[in-house]
Length: 142
Image (tube, rainbow, N blue to C red; front, side):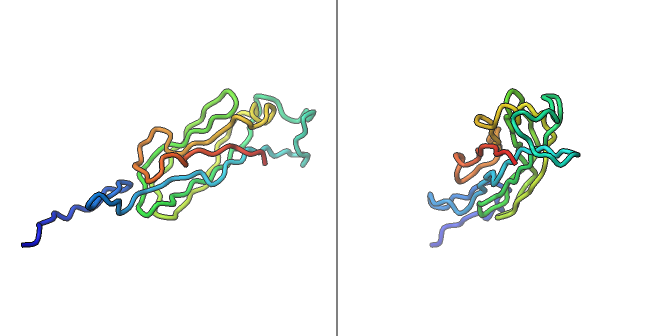
């Protein structure tokens, strides 16, 4: 006699397990994170540049993608730039869907370099993912 199985639709971002085999899950990654500053004079930044100060604003542009095979839930992105932390909301992304956005940030990281600056998607572990170890990316200067 066949076994009765209740069909329950999956919750967005939740992995489905059938007979101990994962059927699908979300997997969020940071594709890129670029820190930049535009100058009205058109000059580019050099270490001796006097056009910007630590209080001026720079722009962090990031792209996040869901490389999983089910939609992700809402989560947060955390950017750590020099001494400052910024958070942004990332709304649900479908499979292979990505979003690009910008954050206005202080230029302190520009002066210090970006060696320790990073961006992490799903920083609070709100989304069940197939790989929780690929949510982090270093920041590059643009």
